[in-house]
Length: 416
Image (cartoon, rainbow, N blue to C red; front, side, top):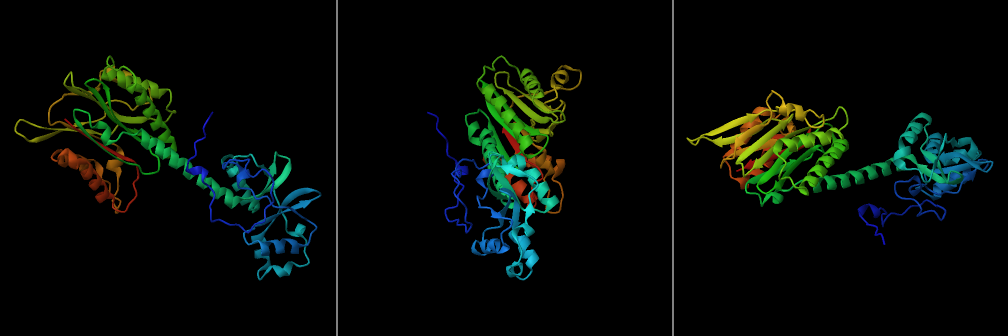
Protein backbone atom coordinates (compact mmCIF):
# COMPACT_ATOMS: atom_id res chain seq x y z
CA UNK A 1 0.00 0.00 0.00
CA UNK A 2 1.39 3.40 -1.00
CA UNK A 3 1.33 6.03 1.71
CA UNK A 4 0.64 9.65 0.91
CA UNK A 5 2.87 12.01 2.84
CA UNK A 6 0.98 14.96 4.29
CA UNK A 7 3.09 18.11 4.56
CA UNK A 8 2.21 21.72 5.37
CA UNK A 9 1.01 22.46 1.82
CA UNK A 10 -2.04 20.20 2.36
CA UNK A 11 -3.29 22.40 5.20
CA UNK A 12 -4.42 25.17 2.86
CA UNK A 13 -7.86 26.05 4.24
CA UNK A 14 -8.26 28.80 6.80
CA UNK A 15 -10.36 27.50 9.70
CA UNK A 16 -11.63 30.99 10.45
CA UNK A 17 -12.20 32.01 6.84
CA UNK A 18 -15.83 32.60 5.95
CA UNK A 19 -17.14 33.86 2.63
CA UNK A 20 -20.41 35.58 1.86
CA UNK A 21 -20.40 34.23 -1.70
CA UNK A 22 -23.28 31.85 -2.42
CA UNK A 23 -21.64 29.07 -4.42
CA UNK A 24 -23.42 26.02 -5.76
CA UNK A 25 -22.45 22.44 -4.99
CA UNK A 26 -21.06 20.74 -8.07
CA UNK A 27 -19.76 17.44 -6.73
CA UNK A 28 -16.33 18.27 -8.15
CA UNK A 29 -15.12 20.41 -5.23
CA UNK A 30 -12.45 17.91 -4.17
CA UNK A 31 -11.52 16.73 -7.66
CA UNK A 32 -8.70 19.20 -8.28
CA UNK A 33 -5.33 19.70 -6.65
CA UNK A 34 -4.25 23.13 -5.49
CA UNK A 35 -2.27 23.77 -8.66
CA UNK A 36 -5.32 23.47 -10.89
CA UNK A 37 -7.76 26.24 -11.82
CA UNK A 38 -10.71 24.24 -10.50
CA UNK A 39 -9.40 24.53 -6.94
CA UNK A 40 -9.90 28.31 -6.90
CA UNK A 41 -12.88 28.66 -9.28
CA UNK A 42 -16.17 29.97 -7.87
CA UNK A 43 -19.16 27.84 -8.90
CA UNK A 44 -21.78 30.60 -9.26
CA UNK A 45 -25.10 30.17 -11.06
CA UNK A 46 -25.19 32.30 -14.22
CA UNK A 47 -27.81 35.01 -14.78
CA UNK A 48 -29.58 35.60 -18.09
CA UNK A 49 -28.37 38.53 -20.17
CA UNK A 50 -32.03 39.60 -20.48
CA UNK A 51 -32.54 39.79 -16.75
CA UNK A 52 -32.79 43.17 -15.10
CA UNK A 53 -29.55 44.48 -13.71
CA UNK A 54 -31.38 44.63 -10.38
CA UNK A 55 -30.84 40.88 -10.13
CA UNK A 56 -27.06 41.28 -10.14
CA UNK A 57 -27.16 44.39 -7.97
CA UNK A 58 -29.14 42.50 -5.36
CA UNK A 59 -26.60 39.65 -5.45
CA UNK A 60 -23.75 42.11 -4.89
CA UNK A 61 -25.59 43.77 -2.00
CA UNK A 62 -26.38 40.47 -0.31
CA UNK A 63 -22.95 38.91 -0.94
CA UNK A 64 -20.20 41.46 -0.11
CA UNK A 65 -17.40 39.08 -1.15
CA UNK A 66 -18.92 38.41 -4.57
CA UNK A 67 -16.80 40.21 -7.19
CA UNK A 68 -18.48 39.07 -10.43
CA UNK A 69 -21.53 37.25 -11.76
CA UNK A 70 -21.46 35.03 -14.88
CA UNK A 71 -23.92 35.98 -17.63
CA UNK A 72 -25.49 33.54 -20.09
CA UNK A 73 -27.11 34.09 -23.46
CA UNK A 74 -28.80 31.41 -25.57
CA UNK A 75 -27.83 28.75 -23.00
CA UNK A 76 -24.12 29.66 -23.15
CA UNK A 77 -22.14 31.71 -20.63
CA UNK A 78 -20.63 34.61 -22.56
CA UNK A 79 -18.96 36.72 -19.89
CA UNK A 80 -19.32 38.40 -16.51
CA UNK A 81 -20.70 41.49 -14.87
CA UNK A 82 -18.05 42.76 -12.47
CA UNK A 83 -18.79 44.57 -9.24
CA UNK A 84 -16.08 47.22 -9.56
CA UNK A 85 -17.17 48.08 -13.12
CA UNK A 86 -20.68 48.85 -11.89
CA UNK A 87 -19.33 50.85 -8.96
CA UNK A 88 -17.19 52.96 -11.28
CA UNK A 89 -20.11 53.56 -13.63
CA UNK A 90 -22.60 54.43 -10.91
CA UNK A 91 -20.35 56.83 -9.06
CA UNK A 92 -22.84 57.38 -6.25
CA UNK A 93 -24.56 54.01 -5.96
CA UNK A 94 -26.12 50.99 -7.59
CA UNK A 95 -29.66 52.39 -7.84
CA UNK A 96 -28.91 54.35 -11.04
CA UNK A 97 -29.07 51.11 -13.05
CA UNK A 98 -32.73 50.24 -12.44
CA UNK A 99 -33.79 50.19 -16.11
CA UNK A 100 -30.79 48.31 -17.52
CA UNK A 101 -30.34 44.61 -18.32
CA UNK A 102 -27.38 42.43 -17.44
CA UNK A 103 -26.48 42.15 -21.11
CA UNK A 104 -25.80 45.90 -21.23
CA UNK A 105 -22.91 45.54 -18.76
CA UNK A 106 -21.49 42.13 -19.57
CA UNK A 107 -17.76 41.82 -20.24
CA UNK A 108 -17.26 39.03 -22.72
CA UNK A 109 -14.41 36.62 -22.01
CA UNK A 110 -12.10 36.17 -25.03
CA UNK A 111 -11.38 32.58 -24.01
CA UNK A 112 -12.23 30.02 -21.36
CA UNK A 113 -10.19 27.96 -18.95
CA UNK A 114 -10.70 24.35 -17.95
CA UNK A 115 -10.87 23.15 -14.35
CA UNK A 116 -7.96 20.81 -14.98
CA UNK A 117 -5.68 23.56 -16.34
CA UNK A 118 -2.59 24.16 -14.24
CA UNK A 119 -2.38 27.69 -12.88
CA UNK A 120 1.35 28.04 -13.66
CA UNK A 121 0.76 27.21 -17.34
CA UNK A 122 -2.15 29.58 -18.00
CA UNK A 123 -1.17 32.51 -15.76
CA UNK A 124 0.84 34.37 -18.42
CA UNK A 125 -1.98 34.17 -20.99
CA UNK A 126 -4.59 35.18 -18.41
CA UNK A 127 -2.63 38.22 -17.23
CA UNK A 128 -1.92 39.37 -20.77
CA UNK A 129 -5.66 39.21 -21.49
CA UNK A 130 -6.49 41.03 -18.27
CA UNK A 131 -4.37 43.97 -19.40
CA UNK A 132 -5.49 44.05 -23.05
CA UNK A 133 -9.28 43.79 -22.52
CA UNK A 134 -9.51 45.03 -18.91
CA UNK A 135 -11.24 41.99 -17.49
CA UNK A 136 -10.73 40.58 -14.01
CA UNK A 137 -12.53 37.22 -14.24
CA UNK A 138 -12.38 34.29 -16.64
CA UNK A 139 -15.04 31.66 -17.37
CA UNK A 140 -14.12 28.13 -16.27
CA UNK A 141 -15.44 24.94 -17.89
CA UNK A 142 -15.51 21.36 -16.70
CA UNK A 143 -14.06 18.84 -19.17
CA UNK A 144 -13.82 21.71 -21.69
CA UNK A 145 -17.57 21.51 -22.26
CA UNK A 146 -19.95 22.44 -19.47
CA UNK A 147 -19.90 25.69 -17.51
CA UNK A 148 -18.40 25.26 -14.04
CA UNK A 149 -17.87 28.77 -12.68
CA UNK A 150 -15.58 31.78 -12.85
CA UNK A 151 -12.11 32.47 -11.53
CA UNK A 152 -10.77 35.78 -10.26
CA UNK A 153 -7.50 36.74 -11.94
CA UNK A 154 -6.37 38.41 -8.72
CA UNK A 155 -7.06 35.21 -6.81
CA UNK A 156 -5.18 33.22 -9.44
CA UNK A 157 -2.12 35.47 -9.10
CA UNK A 158 -2.27 35.24 -5.31
CA UNK A 159 -2.44 31.45 -5.54
CA UNK A 160 0.46 31.43 -7.97
CA UNK A 161 2.59 33.43 -5.53
CA UNK A 162 1.60 31.07 -2.73
CA UNK A 163 2.57 28.01 -4.78
CA UNK A 164 5.91 29.53 -5.74
CA UNK A 165 6.62 30.38 -2.11
CA UNK A 166 5.85 26.79 -1.13
CA UNK A 167 8.11 25.45 -3.87
CA UNK A 168 10.95 27.74 -2.82
CA UNK A 169 10.54 26.70 0.80
CA UNK A 170 10.78 23.03 -0.15
CA UNK A 171 13.72 23.67 -2.49
CA UNK A 172 15.54 25.56 0.27
CA UNK A 173 14.99 22.67 2.67
CA UNK A 174 16.36 20.20 0.12
CA UNK A 175 19.41 22.36 -0.57
CA UNK A 176 20.17 22.94 3.10
CA UNK A 177 19.82 19.23 3.79
CA UNK A 178 22.58 18.54 1.24
CA UNK A 179 25.02 21.01 2.73
CA UNK A 180 27.43 19.74 5.34
CA UNK A 181 27.33 21.04 8.88
CA UNK A 182 30.27 21.74 11.17
CA UNK A 183 29.21 18.75 13.23
CA UNK A 184 29.78 16.48 10.20
CA UNK A 185 33.53 17.14 10.40
CA UNK A 186 34.01 16.41 14.10
CA UNK A 187 35.68 13.06 13.41
CA UNK A 188 38.21 14.56 11.00
CA UNK A 189 41.84 14.63 12.25
CA UNK A 190 41.84 18.37 11.49
CA UNK A 191 39.38 21.22 12.05
CA UNK A 192 36.98 22.65 9.48
CA UNK A 193 34.81 25.69 10.19
CA UNK A 194 32.00 26.23 7.68
CA UNK A 195 29.92 29.41 7.49
CA UNK A 196 27.24 29.95 4.84
CA UNK A 197 24.50 32.49 4.22
CA UNK A 198 22.28 32.51 1.14
CA UNK A 199 21.20 35.83 -0.36
CA UNK A 200 17.82 34.31 -1.29
CA UNK A 201 15.75 31.28 -0.33
CA UNK A 202 17.89 29.12 -2.60
CA UNK A 203 21.28 29.94 -4.04
CA UNK A 204 24.24 28.94 -6.15
CA UNK A 205 26.86 28.33 -3.46
CA UNK A 206 27.79 24.76 -2.59
CA UNK A 207 30.43 23.33 -0.29
CA UNK A 208 31.61 19.88 0.69
CA UNK A 209 33.71 18.37 3.46
CA UNK A 210 33.88 14.59 3.41
CA UNK A 211 36.21 11.63 3.85
CA UNK A 212 37.07 9.93 0.56
CA UNK A 213 38.76 6.91 2.07
CA UNK A 214 41.02 6.18 5.02
CA UNK A 215 43.44 9.06 5.49
CA UNK A 216 42.11 11.10 2.54
CA UNK A 217 39.67 14.00 2.71
CA UNK A 218 38.05 16.43 0.31
CA UNK A 219 37.06 19.98 1.20
CA UNK A 220 35.63 22.23 -1.49
CA UNK A 221 33.81 25.48 -2.12
CA UNK A 222 31.80 26.00 -5.33
CA UNK A 223 29.90 28.87 -6.91
CA UNK A 224 27.42 28.28 -9.74
CA UNK A 225 26.98 31.02 -12.32
CA UNK A 226 23.44 32.41 -12.29
CA UNK A 227 21.00 33.00 -9.48
CA UNK A 228 18.16 31.42 -7.54
CA UNK A 229 16.43 28.26 -8.79
CA UNK A 230 18.54 27.57 -11.89
CA UNK A 231 21.75 27.83 -9.88
CA UNK A 232 20.28 25.82 -7.02
CA UNK A 233 19.46 22.95 -9.40
CA UNK A 234 23.13 22.70 -10.35
CA UNK A 235 24.15 22.64 -6.69
CA UNK A 236 21.83 19.64 -6.31
CA UNK A 237 23.80 18.00 -9.12
CA UNK A 238 27.04 18.66 -7.25
CA UNK A 239 25.54 17.22 -4.11
CA UNK A 240 24.48 14.09 -5.98
CA UNK A 241 27.99 13.57 -7.34
CA UNK A 242 29.62 13.78 -3.93
CA UNK A 243 26.93 11.55 -2.42
CA UNK A 244 27.80 8.92 -5.02
CA UNK A 245 31.51 9.33 -4.25
CA UNK A 246 30.78 8.61 -0.61
CA UNK A 247 29.44 5.20 -1.63
CA UNK A 248 32.34 4.35 -3.97
CA UNK A 249 35.83 3.01 -3.32
CA UNK A 250 37.98 6.09 -3.93
CA UNK A 251 41.23 4.61 -2.63
CA UNK A 252 42.67 4.25 -6.15
CA UNK A 253 41.44 7.62 -7.36
CA UNK A 254 44.10 10.33 -7.08
CA UNK A 255 43.28 14.00 -6.61
CA UNK A 256 43.74 15.00 -10.26
CA UNK A 257 41.60 12.12 -11.50
CA UNK A 258 38.84 13.11 -9.12
CA UNK A 259 38.82 16.74 -10.30
CA UNK A 260 38.87 15.72 -13.98
CA UNK A 261 36.06 13.24 -13.40
CA UNK A 262 33.99 15.98 -11.74
CA UNK A 263 34.54 18.31 -14.69
CA UNK A 264 33.67 15.67 -17.28
CA UNK A 265 30.48 14.78 -15.45
CA UNK A 266 29.38 18.41 -15.13
CA UNK A 267 30.17 19.06 -18.80
CA UNK A 268 27.25 16.79 -19.72
CA UNK A 269 24.83 18.62 -17.42
CA UNK A 270 25.77 22.30 -17.20
CA UNK A 271 24.01 24.31 -19.96
CA UNK A 272 26.11 26.14 -22.53
CA UNK A 273 27.02 29.56 -21.15
CA UNK A 274 26.94 28.39 -17.55
CA UNK A 275 29.84 27.18 -15.44
CA UNK A 276 30.79 26.34 -11.87
CA UNK A 277 33.86 27.78 -10.19
CA UNK A 278 35.43 25.75 -7.44
CA UNK A 279 38.35 25.51 -5.04
CA UNK A 280 39.08 21.98 -3.86
CA UNK A 281 41.51 20.86 -1.17
CA UNK A 282 42.48 17.20 -1.30
CA UNK A 283 44.10 16.21 1.99
CA UNK A 284 46.24 13.07 2.07
CA UNK A 285 47.50 12.10 5.51
CA UNK A 286 49.44 9.11 4.17
CA UNK A 287 51.38 11.29 1.74
CA UNK A 288 51.47 14.17 4.25
CA UNK A 289 50.36 16.58 1.53
CA UNK A 290 47.55 18.92 0.51
CA UNK A 291 46.63 19.47 -3.14
CA UNK A 292 44.66 22.61 -3.95
CA UNK A 293 42.80 22.90 -7.26
CA UNK A 294 41.56 26.42 -7.95
CA UNK A 295 39.20 26.17 -10.91
CA UNK A 296 38.24 29.76 -11.72
CA UNK A 297 37.29 30.40 -8.08
CA UNK A 298 38.30 33.22 -5.75
CA UNK A 299 41.85 33.31 -4.44
CA UNK A 300 42.65 30.68 -1.82
CA UNK A 301 44.76 31.82 1.13
CA UNK A 302 47.16 29.52 2.99
CA UNK A 303 48.69 30.69 6.27
CA UNK A 304 51.66 29.18 8.15
CA UNK A 305 54.18 30.42 10.69
CA UNK A 306 57.84 30.34 9.72
CA UNK A 307 60.70 29.10 11.92
CA UNK A 308 60.83 32.47 13.66
CA UNK A 309 57.13 32.22 14.52
CA UNK A 310 56.08 34.92 12.09
CA UNK A 311 52.89 34.38 10.13
CA UNK A 312 53.28 33.93 6.38
CA UNK A 313 50.59 33.85 3.71
CA UNK A 314 50.47 32.25 0.26
CA UNK A 315 47.88 33.46 -2.27
CA UNK A 316 46.71 30.61 -4.51
CA UNK A 317 45.19 32.28 -7.55
CA UNK A 318 42.98 30.32 -9.97
CA UNK A 319 45.16 28.36 -12.42
CA UNK A 320 42.52 26.00 -13.83
CA UNK A 321 39.32 26.68 -15.82
CA UNK A 322 35.90 26.47 -14.17
CA UNK A 323 33.97 23.21 -14.08
CA UNK A 324 31.40 22.29 -16.68
CA UNK A 325 33.37 23.12 -19.82
CA UNK A 326 35.43 19.94 -20.09
CA UNK A 327 38.70 21.88 -20.09
CA UNK A 328 40.17 20.89 -16.72
CA UNK A 329 41.89 17.70 -17.96
CA UNK A 330 43.87 19.53 -20.65
CA UNK A 331 44.81 22.29 -18.21
CA UNK A 332 46.13 19.85 -15.61
CA UNK A 333 48.28 17.96 -18.13
CA UNK A 334 49.35 21.08 -20.04
CA UNK A 335 52.44 23.22 -19.73
CA UNK A 336 50.80 25.97 -17.69
CA UNK A 337 50.40 25.98 -13.93
CA UNK A 338 47.95 23.42 -12.59
CA UNK A 339 47.14 22.42 -9.02
CA UNK A 340 49.08 23.56 -5.97
CA UNK A 341 50.79 21.05 -3.70
CA UNK A 342 52.05 21.78 -0.21
CA UNK A 343 53.30 19.69 2.69
CA UNK A 344 50.80 19.00 5.44
CA UNK A 345 52.23 20.75 8.51
CA UNK A 346 50.87 21.45 11.95
CA UNK A 347 49.59 25.02 12.14
CA UNK A 348 48.75 25.25 8.44
CA UNK A 349 45.49 27.05 7.71
CA UNK A 350 43.71 27.18 4.35
CA UNK A 351 40.79 29.52 3.68
CA UNK A 352 38.21 29.04 0.93
CA UNK A 353 35.38 31.46 0.22
CA UNK A 354 32.88 32.43 -2.47
CA UNK A 355 32.91 35.83 -4.15
CA UNK A 356 29.87 36.86 -2.14
CA UNK A 357 32.31 37.50 0.71
CA UNK A 358 34.43 40.00 -1.23
CA UNK A 359 31.36 41.48 -2.96
CA UNK A 360 29.31 42.18 0.18
CA UNK A 361 28.54 45.87 0.50
CA UNK A 362 28.21 48.28 3.38
CA UNK A 363 25.29 50.67 3.83
CA UNK A 364 27.35 53.17 1.83
CA UNK A 365 27.74 50.75 -1.08
CA UNK A 366 31.43 50.03 -0.41
CA UNK A 367 32.67 46.52 -1.29
CA UNK A 368 34.51 44.43 1.27
CA UNK A 369 37.06 43.70 -1.50
CA UNK A 370 40.06 41.38 -1.76
CA UNK A 371 42.42 43.35 0.49
CA UNK A 372 40.05 43.30 3.46
CA UNK A 373 39.35 39.62 2.85
CA UNK A 374 43.04 38.77 2.98
CA UNK A 375 43.50 40.88 6.12
CA UNK A 376 40.51 39.22 7.77
CA UNK A 377 41.92 35.73 7.25
CA UNK A 378 45.24 36.97 8.60
CA UNK A 379 43.47 37.96 11.81
CA UNK A 380 41.55 34.68 11.83
CA UNK A 381 44.87 32.82 11.66
CA UNK A 382 45.72 34.06 15.14
CA UNK A 383 42.45 32.94 16.75
CA UNK A 384 41.46 29.51 18.03
CA UNK A 385 39.13 27.25 16.08
CA UNK A 386 36.27 27.78 18.51
CA UNK A 387 36.22 31.50 17.73
CA UNK A 388 36.28 31.13 13.94
CA UNK A 389 32.56 30.82 13.27
CA UNK A 390 31.65 33.81 15.44
CA UNK A 391 34.47 35.85 13.88
CA UNK A 392 33.16 35.19 10.36
CA UNK A 393 29.60 36.01 11.42
CA UNK A 394 30.75 39.27 13.00
CA UNK A 395 32.79 40.28 9.95
CA UNK A 396 29.76 39.85 7.70
CA UNK A 397 27.15 41.47 9.94
CA UNK A 398 29.40 44.39 10.90
CA UNK A 399 30.13 45.16 7.25
CA UNK A 400 26.69 44.79 5.66
CA UNK A 401 24.77 46.24 8.64
CA UNK A 402 21.34 46.99 7.11
CA UNK A 403 22.15 46.40 3.44
CA UNK A 404 21.05 43.31 1.55
CA UNK A 405 23.43 40.57 0.48
CA UNK A 406 24.13 40.85 -3.27
CA UNK A 407 25.23 37.23 -3.42
CA UNK A 408 25.53 34.03 -1.39
CA UNK A 409 28.46 33.85 1.04
CA UNK A 410 30.43 30.73 1.92
CA UNK A 411 33.57 30.73 4.07
CA UNK A 412 35.59 27.63 4.99
CA UNK A 413 38.48 27.78 7.45
CA UNK A 414 40.63 24.60 7.48
CA UNK A 415 43.13 24.10 10.32
CA UNK A 416 45.77 21.37 10.59
